[in-house]
Length: 275
Ligand code: NAD
Ligand code: FES
Image (cartoon, rainbow, N blue to C red; front, side, top):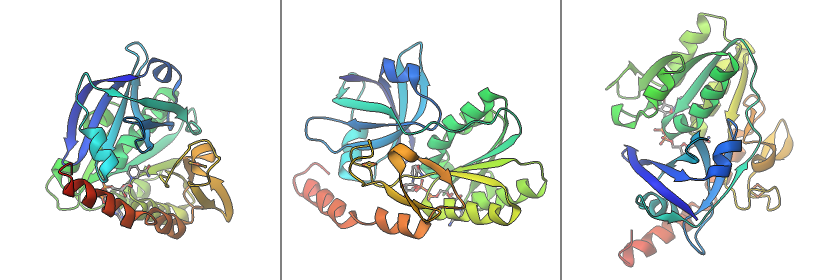
């Protein structure tokens, strides 16, 4: 069992949970994730480890409440417990030891880019972060990223920071030169757009993919993605891949596979007074 120590709302439907998980907190590396279950028979939910405190034995999980299971997860209050947490899973981010990296986070994906930026900064890399949200209230992890290097905030409606998408700011940073790598995490159209901005410039681009995951061990095939024409499993071969090689159309289509079942689960919960 893992005790919830804090539950903080970061954005309208984005929640940060701090949870006891001493072993994971000690051995996790940037880019890795866990699979959690809130209770017996609950859905298994893959979540990136947004931060960890090895001394305190805690990990930080950031959850966007989009379906019935994630809504149940964010409803957990301090003192309550998560049934199980499996991890750390996936390959750690490959960290160079010098150079200049740009970390691009879109919406809730900013929570995933944070440990990558942290790992890069600790390895000695100069980090510039570009983070975006629909409006000011959707911008997350700004303070944490500012502590690691120059940070540019963008909002779609111009309510805070620069008006526009993260890709607009990325174009300007790349035009100034001296960027060795770009790490991008966020919605699929954003990661695709980032890859198209960097492709003509030949800048190495890493994206963190979030396909449907079930077992997280490479057995079920649920997280299948196509990278450079080859089948890979995001849970064991990723979740980070070369953004110039990803088949984003396939990823988008596979992410939509269970949308109608998710809607049915939410409708059922609403009828039962739990939605
Ligand atoms: P959102 O749709 O509000 O977009 C966030 C930001 O991304 C925008 O402010 C903009 O700057 C940028 N963006 C969006 N579309 C773009 C485009 N076409 N071109 C350029 N930039 C664009 O994001 P959200 O609602 O917070 O994100 C939700 C999505 O992110 C979900 O689909 C979720 O599955 C996905 N997600 C992915 C990961 C991952 O590991 N890749 C992690 C968490 C969430
Ligand atoms: Fe089953 Fe990756 S989640 S193979």
